[in-house]
Image 1: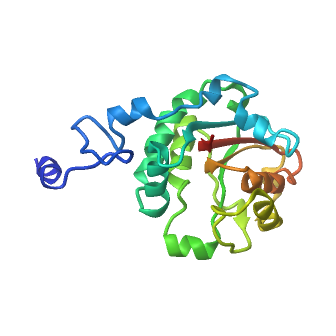
Image 2: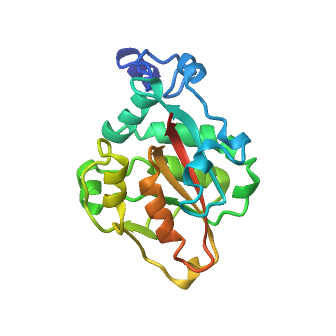
Image 3: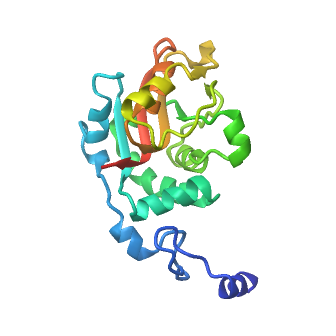
Length: 226
């Protein structure tokens, strides 16, 4: 009763188009769900996400759920998730993608889900890592432990959004590190992030994880620029 009254006076809006959600809709309206551009990477072994990292770092598999277009539905969702505190968006995307990821043979033996970390200063300012709810939802649904302490960001750097590929490559060198011990040897890590752009940050994180003896790496992201 109270919930119905709250929704009546403060109706929830779709994270993609800002229209009011119907009673059976959660975070994303039905219309946006049908219009969001899906990559279908999970159906293709050598998909464009995998090819993005080919020859850069050895990976088992790479995938993203959505295509990211400027001024599109996915951009609106990612902006609200990253800067407006709408962490429930990550949970919904995690639930959505989990069903596809369960069928990927290369991920069946994964040992840990590892988020691209924020520097502690940025984490304090923002209050959260935008991939946390996505990662924790995947962890629950895939029954793979979520670990946010193994990979750390040692250097505080300005946003990568407007940097060139060369500029990004220069700034991500050696800014990440690992808190390694023998318990992480010979493990398969799923590295997660919000959007694959140039792939430089994910590459840098992956290189650190692959320094662990016997490590294997896969990459799962919410979206990829097209």
